[in-house]
Image 1 (cartoon, chains in turn green, red):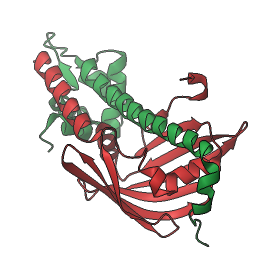
Image 2: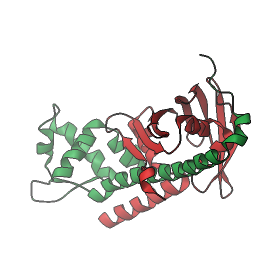
Image 3: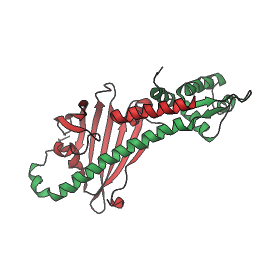
Image 4: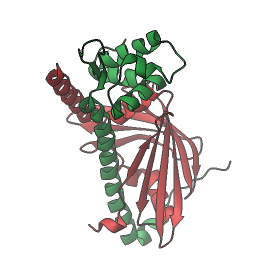
Length: 123
Length: 162
């Protein structure tokens, strides 16, 4: 079992059923029974998945009398989206450096042609 | 900078496959973009993570060749290595990629260079790893800063919730 919060979110989302549950809870809160309905599994199995999601902080359960609906913690889920956006921004920064390299290549193409690398080994 | 000639990088994390796709267009022909990927003197100018100095240890950008480089940041060194599975001039590069900090992790990266009208190039990169968890960890790892920031904001969120 993963111990740090980041890893437990990744483990929680590594399972397709749990990703499905998260997608459903993104639309609306739901009880365990409601979540279990479309799946060919027992309520107990879904409960286990929900427990993993709860431990990761992605899902919480309120004490609303007997219903105890499951609720997606949108802030925690947004963090995943933010990580992708940060990854994208870093890639974009890298490629802007490549833009600059390519612009310089145009400027001194004539001088550097002589030391072109031998590439493309025969296959 | 004229943004219309620099379409932004697009990243797609497939919801059911452990892959990451990256698409970016360049205002240069495929042979130049290809060269900037294989000539080590050019590669060090852009490839290393932001704020790091990239030093090439081994660089043999040929089919069957290999590479290793080190990215240095505030006295810390981060090593990366892999093999060039296929280097097809001006067209496609297939390589493995391992961050030495995660020695069991390996990504299979395919980069293709597609010629566009007007002397431009569309680069498409596909990275494949062996689990969804590894893919997500790859997204979360902006090296040291990314992971630490990720932990810190997550800590804040979890503290606020409880």
